[in-house]
Image (cartoon, rainbow, N blue to C red; front, side, top):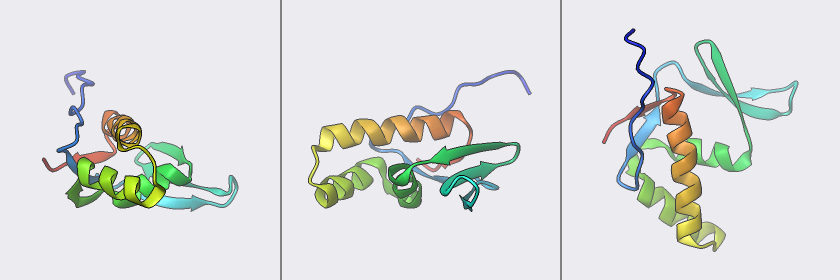
Length: 100
């Protein structure tokens, strides 16, 4: 490895899916779902789980945001900021495959 830690820049046009080897699993001890990757784990709340499920490798972040805004009746800009920030965190942790 060359020591680089930079990940892809996430925006509304980004299409992503979970990286190979990354799985969403129930953690019975904590009573919540966790994202598992080789040698790392990330505990998720209900909204994060919804975002992970939406990262299907087909829909863009904008499409996911639009669907959530319609479903929850919340301001699109607020949802977009939250979704992009979370997806950026997943990307930074190398838990995503960025398709475009």
